Length: 100
Image (tube, rainbow, N blue to C red; front, side):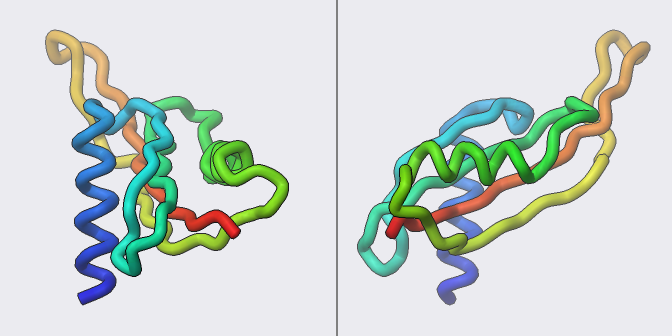
């Protein structure tokens, strides 16, 4: 049940931020009632990596640090195209953290 709740939180955060290729950090309420941050670090940038999520988690939580509550991603799924000419590989990365 807890994993289902976390998956719902990640999905909700992705929907709330709009497009899956948009990076965002959103404050959320975790299933245990505490506050945390949902980080969407998805994109089609070949240079993108989990490092961006870790960097933003550090910025959100500051020097006290954080614990990773959940982390989910898929590498290189085919994305949309422009008039059928250009196709992007979309990497999906989402992470939920709880600050110390």
